[in-house]
Amino acid sequence: MEAKNNNKEWLTVLLSIFLSVFAVAALAAILAMLQKTFESKLSPTFNWRQVLGIQTVYAAPLKGYEALQVSANSQITMKSGETKNVSISFQNIGTEVWKNSGTNFVSVYTYEPKYRTSVFYDSSWYAKDQPVKLTESSVAVNKVGTISFKLTAPSQGGTYKETFALAAEDKAWIPGGQFTITINVSSTTSVVTSTSPTVSTDGDTSSSTNGYTATLLVKSVKKTIQAKG
Image (cartoon, rainbow, N blue to C red):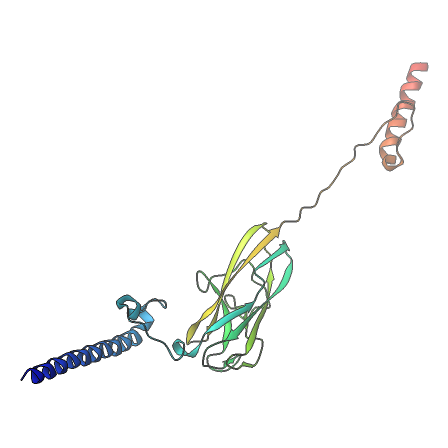
């Protein structure tokens, strides 16, 4: 009789564990569907699983795009009006192949805020808020791609911070593709030095002021004649 009671207790415990696991799995599935449905209305960094303490390992990044920056021009110095080329390299750690043409081509946009007009805009840019497309025609998963574009410094000197971000056109901002360049711009100023003519009391003056010297000599001769007369 006691053995039967023990068996019933074990069955009750196992059933409770099974139901708990099933409930957590079902809740996670429901939240995943909700997150996908309202994804466009939520912050990209918002995650219901993190709020509830549910840890989930993703098999692939959201929408298949993710980048890892491997090199960059993080700080440069320019003179006002000067044009310089900057290059940034990213490793494709997502699941989608990057392309520089066709649907969802990869490019770089101005950021913070998005689509802003940059004072470093150059006429070579693809668009006012979109400096350039991916250099390579395609970048496979785990390979490295490059973004290379020109910056033209404004006339106003100072220290600027320009932020840009990778994007798959009409699909997603690429996680890990945001970067900021600190730019020190020095303004160029022309200095003009003027020299006043030097007049000597004995009539000897600098040859660089011949016109002014002749006038002084004529006045000097007139004064001498008047004194003698």
